[in-house]
Image (cartoon, rainbow, N blue to C red; front, side, top):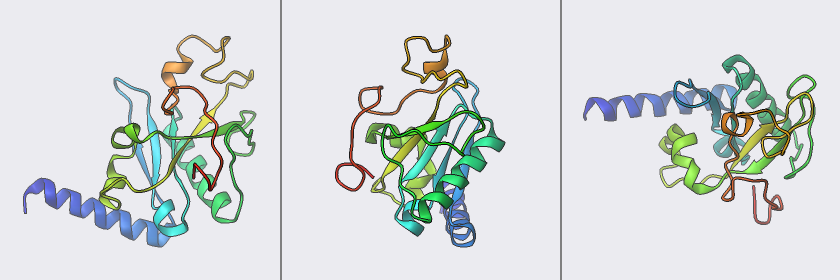
Length: 167
């Protein structure tokens, strides 16, 4: 076994142990030439929930919102596309969009250790500014769309129905 394979197997084992103990593992990716982001691993395996990614939030915040998403969704709350949801960020509602498969390798890399074929659903939690602008809003602050890219096929909000053509 090569060192890379050993590292992958150690990470895979950690993911399995963490999801068994806590329901989900949250992976944080620091941003140097891109915004920071975090994603869940294990929500699909443990609860049949879409994995979630949050882009552009500080690590301590993304850890909390991802854990909140998993707790709320595993308790039965559903997050419809385009719906506005409070309680994740103070004074900053969020919405959810289905993540397009081409973004999976970049934004859910280590999830492939549990699902080698990428056979899991995923959503993106998208935050608006406290002033009410989304990344796609014409009056969004300069650079907001780049700091929180929308990971749909079109790069804009798209319509889908939970349980039918989306997670």
